[in-house]
Length: 485
Image (cartoon, rainbow, N blue to C red):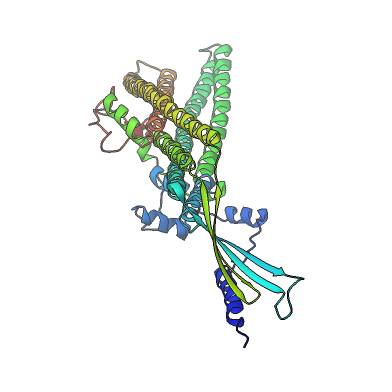
């Protein structure tokens, strides 16, 4: 073997060694097809085994499965499991995690091959030469660590965005759940009222036939009955719309939700309004968007550190080997990319301005949160007191109906008066349903202001007796509406 063969082999071996770690991953196609995605959505059910495992992992009871009834808490977990808005936030978090992992990997090096041909080579000399240059970057200013820190802060912000998406879905589910509950109660109340109005119409017709009342009274009773039919039809439509809203928020098809029974017991006894200081503390410490703003500020802080580190030049060491005319030549060079001082200072000032803007954004949101929590607390407290007044009105209407019933038994009141007092009691109960809707809407707004359920132990004060509720009630009038008592 020629004397220069080992040296030339060394050059080729170095090149092959540097390329050995460059085995690429293979591209894996995954086309997105709308048809199968739509079919998968249509096949979703609340009895899915994956949902059962998710609920079990969250500490929920899953025996028996599927449950006989779905309450708001279980449906909230189902919405987090199924809803695409949460899945999108989780996918973006996965991107942030991958970016952070990438920033921790080794910086790439460069490999330069330098083949040369000397057309004027002397007799006996090889005209070919071969060289290899390797570029090894040097991290001055610790830029890599600063970039990794920035991406870690972005990952924390993405984690909070997952929590924010879950809360938005839960909030939307609760709003539609309340709407469906109130719509169902309203349908029941209007149906009971309509039966009472039909009885009044029949009584008015008999009184008119007997000559005890004018035809105008009968016509007025029929008009009120027709108005009741229209109101009942509208209430049924609102019930269907609310159920569709529950299905959308839960992330399941409407037909799948129709097959399930819903448990509204959590809505029938609203919690008492907590103290204002507890609400303010919870809002300032627990609001997800406030924590997200803190994360955004941390990202801006890390970006400023990165711009400060970028003031240092980018240095690349370039060791090389060259074989030429049976001679081995070693070299060492350094490449430097020196940033313009004026530009780097401008970028630092720009990063400082962004950090200042994020600080101002946090302070503005904090002030808005305090005001929102105070306003939502006042709204809920007022609605809660209004519900108590509506329940007291029910008690008064029932007492009057009981009095008229005793008068009727003694012959001091006619059946028309008895039916009218029954209708007045039913109308009062429907008024309590409206008050319940306003109370639950106020509770939803307060929970959104805190971004946490209001039945947490640190927020739930000792609930006093519901204001205006009598110690006993007559369940014979309309049992479906007495669950609030």
